[in-house]
Image (cartoon, rainbow, N blue to C red):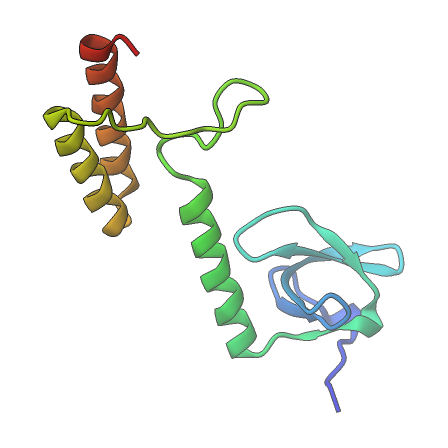
Length: 137
């Protein structure tokens, strides 16, 4: 049997589990008959009926924190994921048989393997500069 929450005893910041959505959130406040929860790590709040919420277990909370950290690492990269409106970002493509392109491509690959988004961005910037200067791209 799952433990339900007494809504008048909820404290802002308490970590709750929405059993209907199977989602962990931080309690913000009561809005009418609903509770307002916010995803761990930030994001859009959602309303949940008090009957559909219970305190999150430590494992559920840890899982939500890990997911939030992974999302942040993926979405807050130093180089934007999108360029001009409507265009998907694409990293520069290496020019075949170019030694400098190959070296910069190797630097970029090493940075990606280390999950070092700053070094990856640096390699892409240098690669774009090289391609504009030496390949007219």
